[in-house]
Image (cartoon, rainbow, N blue to C red; front, top):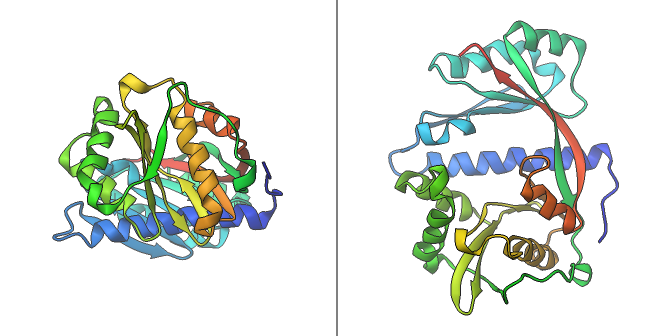
Length: 274
């Protein structure tokens, strides 16, 4: 499976995807009737700040795309959250850390969470792995008309971690129906057992949320969903596919088995003053 040459342009493209994806998601949430998640978006220099007052989505409070020349905006950007007693994270773009920026971040009470990595691959339909799930799995695209089924699979897959509430389901559907996003459902003997999303922006496909019902885990269905999205990516106009997930997690191991490799990205800092 082809792997992209790691260059500053590749890293910048990956970071730009994440910035645009966050913007599209938060703008879509903000546009819902009554702005139920109390979303606010504001620019500070090159960086964008995304704020929500919803307890369900506090992890989405973040500043992305911060660069060395944005130091004069740092206090104002942090106060955008602090004035509402909200903790945020701040992402410094790759190659933008300077001694001055480091000192300013420390002086503001931010702590480094370390540098990030993103798994990525150049998709090639002809080179997708021949890995097979333990059970015969049929994977198909899911239409907008299957909203109830799709969200029910999400609820069953993630209810144990507190993401089965109606408010969270609305958030997930908003994210998974962004323009260009594809959705999949996996079935075993015509019984739906898993789902996955595949957001696409500017030729970059992203392994979005995917879940397998508890009774069907460990049988290779997640890997089958990964392979299917890689195989479909070229026909959707993608020349790059990237994935998230925590380093050394099951998700990352699945990515590596499917041929994805890690690319370094910028550092993440968290506000300790709230």
